[in-house]
Amino acid sequence: RKDPRIESAMPPGVKNLIAVAAGKGGVGKSTVAANLAVALAMDGAKVGLMDADIYGPNQPQMMGVGAGYQPEVDKDNKIAPAEAYGVKLMSMGFLMDPDKPVIWRGPMLHGAITQFLKDVKWGELDYLVLDLPPGTGDVQLTLCQTVPMAGAVIVTTPQSIALSDVRKAVAMFKKLNVPILGAIENMSGFVCAHCSKETKIFAEGSAKALETKFGVPLMGTIPLDPKICDGSDTGKPIVVSAPDSIPAKAFRDAARKVAAAVSVRNASSVPLETKLVKA
Image 1 (cartoon, rainbow, N blue to C red):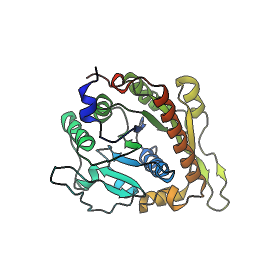
Image 2: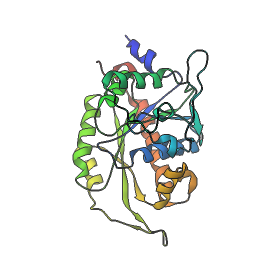
Image 3: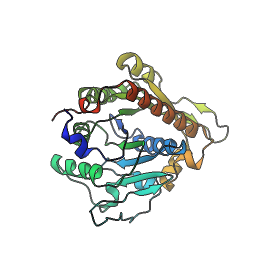
Image 4: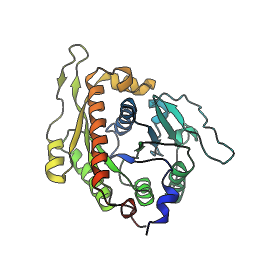
């Protein structure tokens, strides 16, 4: 028998929910989520981006949706998402004072996440990318216990010490029965602005360890490039602002691997109702 929470919480018309997560902050998770979403849309998919990072909602700036944007609410109290670069976007940043901190406990977080899933008019989407907060907290638990995930993408950095944080994120998703599609290694090296060559600046080996120790396939390595920072600051993801750059090509390749992994999972997975973790 199908769990009634699936039909009530799963956004109607959304085929696949993809979580983008990180064991800790500062690894470029939101940048990866934005570029993956736009890259999927550039390949012809219908894509939404839900900024579930309640404490640090950066997607409005990264996606170029101006400060002060107010989403419209229709007579049925349904919220119309913003749209940028072919991606539908909803963020807590649209609903709160940017100068005030979010000091919320579990029930309030649960309510906000549930509202974003149920009350936003996402429409027909191939993928809804979820930019999760860093770590393993209430938001992740709420989402994984409320809706069936197509899978999670873990964002990490090259240093071997990053594995200690990734290990916790991987363990959390496995415990919650969320498939791990793969990992993306951000800041894999530095791209010279003059010669466009990449130089490794961190110790290597963590990406390989992810595959050997945890069975998490590597879906891409994204080098450091000033264009990525510029794009995030100005609201133009690098896959749009510099599509021929090394990082942009890496993001697009990673997005295709993510889409392929979702297709494989869907073709071989058990029914959705068995994926939902019981509270």
